[in-house]
Length: 249
Image 1 (cartoon, rainbow, N blue to C red):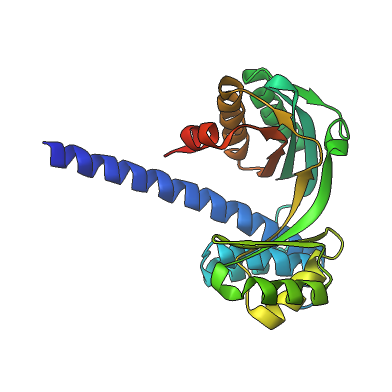
Image 2 (tube, rainbow, N blue to C red; image 1 turned 45 degrees about the horizontal axis):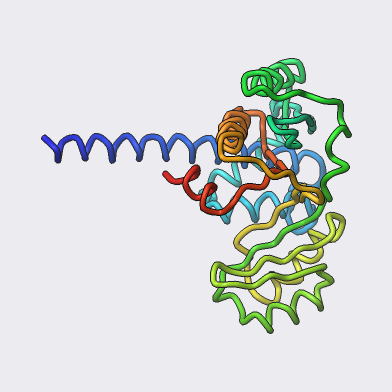
């Protein structure tokens, strides 16, 4: 009986993971389609598309899915999506930025506002919290991509702003404007990166206790679960032991 229960638990986890992966692929495909539609459908000639494809590869998205998303942009039946940014506060005065790609502002805005309300947060106007963040680019490489010294040298030559190297890998930071150029230069020298993305990096953080951190994590998860939401950023800080406990599977 215990074995049967264990099997059911494993299958439940697998089903949940498969669903999460399908949702991730759908979001990646949407970004690829929008990027391809905003410029040339060739990643080598379209920096935004190149970044979208790189991120899809990093998540092991099948090549067929990538090509299908690009072809969708070439067809007349492709949905028209627009980029929308929502800003507001989570409990404890924590700043939150939500980036979305949507074909219906009313639907997406209403859904995002409902999540803020459910978790006792407050939506604000665009610009209400983004001044507490810097728009930067991050490029991640696996630890075996290069030695710390070689990574630092390559990053300097590519025009990056900063590099952090550790057992988990290398994190290269660039200005948002130089992200595509730096990523391409590093890829040419070190191979394909593990991840390339534009982020909102907090310049001012807010410390919270375990209870508020738990609520904020649930709020972020609920926002991220929305099909239209591409990314969620916040500036909350909590001690590592509490964060590890709250994020344990």
